[in-house]
Length: 373
Image 1 (cartoon, rainbow, N blue to C red):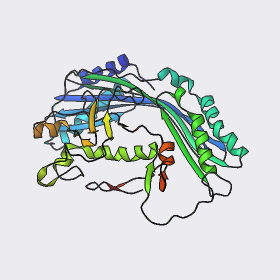
Image 2 (cartoon, helix red, strand yellow):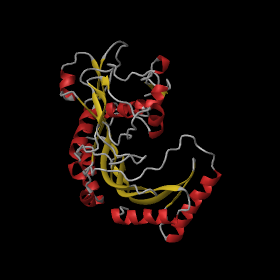
Image 3 (cartoon, rainbow, N blue to C red):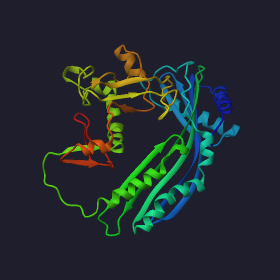
């Protein structure tokens, strides 16, 4: 469920009033959503979900302990607080424990579409699914896929007066269409924070078109090919790349941004001139949260600018150790720079391979960014 800002703040204040520890952090998160799954040209499942959780972390010096509950009556909340305190008393000291943060200034990022989510019910999802099922059946093809919508909130507080509250929404649609002979397959997807702008028709059309035009594939000889990555494939890679911008990992020589002698590639030209990767919580297409898990206010920050490594991400502990300012963990990742469409890139390529998506990527060597596919 979506708890209001005032209700969430009232519960967190109750937690801190009950606390007997030297300090405490607490948070509430929850959400609700719906989904429809389809396969073999028919709907197989349709469901709704609702969730709500409270977590409490208690501190005694550099000892800490955490507990969670999904029950919000007074007795359950107090049990959760006491459990966190009991665990903290038994825990060993953590030398990297940082002081609890006090009040922070958060900027509302907006971009939440809670009202629109109310219209994205099972009937809305069924209409979107029909956009691919009906034409697939007419062409003797088989379609399968998944459409889902969700609205979430998070609240964070500390016994020193910090409080933050955010809401977010997401909707996504993915489908795979296969030809009757099994040689043609098409996959497409779309994601939007506003379900009313989710282009479900385009997803249906693209997956059917790809299935039709990929029949009777032929082998290609080994060699060098120009590789064109569609946006979904790029997103799969960028998600892994961002974990490699951790300053501590770079300083300790554990990632591709490390250099010998404890140096890093900060300031090095590492990518093409047009590559620009950054975080901006106020982005309207993909808005982020106004605070991160540490409670730090999020802000716009470049990671790669004009192909150059512009910034590394410093946790509060590592920033203190290195004499730097801490940076919030990015709540979204945006890439821009190029202006050509996939179709334009394909049209100007004589000999190449088009990659629609990557699947089940796992890191093999973080020092060279070698990954499985």
